[in-house]
Length: 157
Image 1 (cartoon, rainbow, N blue to C red):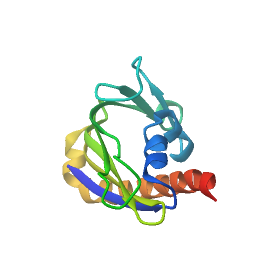
Image 2 (image 1 turned 135 degrees about the vertical axis):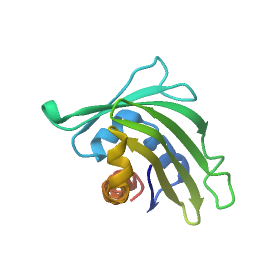
Image 3 (image 1 turned 90 degrees about the vertical axis):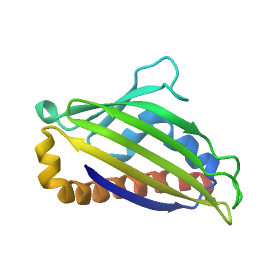
Image 4 (image 1 turned 60 degrees about the vertical axis):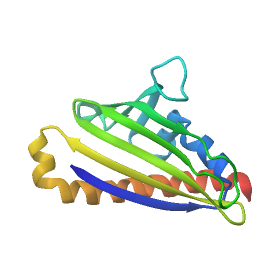
């Protein structure tokens, strides 16, 4: 398995960041070479499904996901329950789990913790290159979360 966690503080309330993070197609605005489409009638809640297509032309792959945990934050104040969303990745190329938490902080801010525990097909790639895949995941998702933060923070300047 390739495991990693990325953390990003955001100068915006937890509920606004949650709303942005669960707007699945919006992830394509932050992640390079990625387009996300919802494949179920409802985009929210347990059972919602979406597909992230990443890459260019014949080098692109689909990353289908199903929401297994959906718990919006209970408020924006420190001590309010954080939001948590978890998905299972059901693709031929990438499998495993991913999730994020949105933790309320003082002064109208919050923290996003993104974690992944994935395998890549063929599985021997993950077995031998797990540390490299984890490093690449931290770099890529770190950039994605920074882009998300800049986007959401614009609303609160």
